[in-house]
Length: 400
Image (cartoon, rainbow, N blue to C red):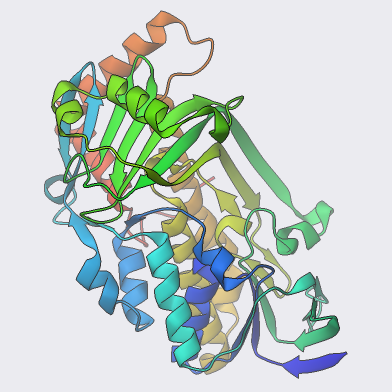
């Protein structure tokens, strides 16, 4: 077995692990990243496309924001379609000049990968049988197998950025962990196509046939979603069937502007709300999807992961530069305060925009009444805008 030494061992080379690694590098803290799949597989994941200001700022702080600013699309509003009519939420107006940016997670990940490679930093892809050890003591370490050989990484801390199905959360002692979960009775069928978006801004749709979302990745690449039953499979949906169903959920103006084309990718994603408490286990810290999942309705998943990374990065810098463990001690509490607020918004927005199985007819009336209130109330518009754009990092105290 070969043994190496680093300060922080990061498990997972998704956006949270890569962002943490890049920030630590900028601060002069050594980190090795271990990932179970190939880099190509990581880049093949089609994920979120909405960045809050905290995520934009962290990309800049990590020194990898140039292409994001050049190609990302700044959005100052979103549109809500219900009762056959569209209503605009002016994020810029109701959130004190704040906006969001459309920049695909794939491109953000690519920027971080390229920067890490250019700096000559160590990332181990296709690492098999990764395991975490000793995190309840002073000498944690990570083991993995690569090309038939056993490897060990001794470290000061382990960052679990390995997602919902990763090894880090699964290795936490069951007696010390509490998990909260809500699984929704439908999924999102997503289609990616090289067609111009139907609208300059995202359209969130509450229709009698179910939820739909008109999103985008660039001015020439669109991303659309349909609410579908969990019993459906991607093979059940031809491109033509997808476009036809989408038209039925849109308003007349959107139907006329919709440009269809062959799909580049189609998939069905289940929806769940999930939170792990705590996020620290000795010298192992969970970040991103390893610690929490939100329904994509509120565009919070990637942004919550970025916030975790910021809190963990700040705590590690404080430890190595000031010999203080205060940030590490408060990491879980700070993260969870923000996580539960984002979970609440995502749950509420999902309840508001989707049709649930076995709903009575009155439920749709309640949804339309609430949407009408929100769109005609300064307080309601502010509530949507401030949550969608992202609450300040110092908003309130602990939640949950």
